[in-house]
Image 1 (spheres, rainbow over the protein chains, first blue to last red):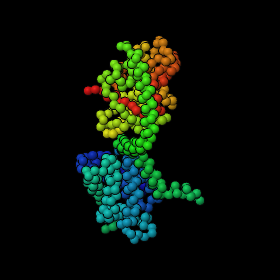
Image 2: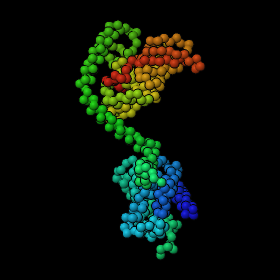
Image 3: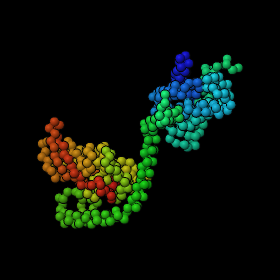
Image 4: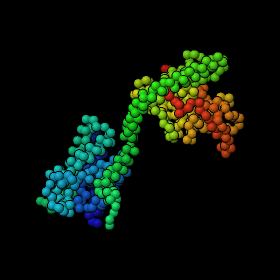
Length: 170
Length: 265
């Protein structure tokens, strides 16, 4: 329950960040930050498919209601949520059988976090911006790349300041 | 608990994930104008290409039909010209080179072919083989040889979408020329070639067989083009108007060669 409340609180903070700070931090036509993606990435690996999926969808629907276009946030967020375990497994091919119970994103160091979070952020921005713009021109591709890098920058700051559990790994 | 195989498949993580993604994508595509328009345009393009091939295959048969209808038309025009007087009302046919048909003055008639026409929809439409490159734009009127049939709703460079009179959103300002009263047409029945004429006041004596023409208020059609004849009249005393059924001259099931009304600059 405590873990669930902590996740809900992080979700609320990320939503508030997106609503209040993202418009100020966005660089018009060059890069748009979307650090709310972090929520889908930090959901505990130990959660069951149903529990994790329900929380991921609920967060997507909430975003869809608050920030149109409707449906797109859930669609892109579920890609992030669905691919985070395969990506982690890809980065660590020799994982023990019950790794999901012992591993948490919050224990990652910066380089692990980069290897895990940047591809997911890029994937999210690729889906989100190409579908929202309904166009895959060079300008949109550039926007996707820059927005992914800029979003990751903010995700990394939030992760380092508020999410990383330093006492677990030195 | 032992679930059947189909239920186990349905409840598998991958399938549930795909279903959720499908719903989210559907919501996005359904409620966001840009992709919805792009998908509609793409599907219309595919539909147009398919029906162009079909039309090419049946074109010899259609040409024979066309010859027959042209023969009938020439006979009708010869009969009409022989009885023409200065007071004759305007008729809705592209014969401005033959007689003085004042309704069509100020307009050029661009011949066009129907590539596809819908049936039994609440929003009947036809795809025409003329588009923006031919000077077509939304809001132009379309005539069949027998009477008006619809209006241009959308255009691309090479083809156009015509909304038929038998489309739930198409309403025309029309008049009963014998009385000079104006009403509005509406199509809300599943019967093609029938329109409802509304807002004709009860103090007018409307008879079956009376002509219905376009009114002078219409921005799409010039006044005086024929639409159809009064088929039946019903009094709606609660509202103080007639509800009149009009049989259109143009037959939706036979539309093939049409004319787009282009205003002369």
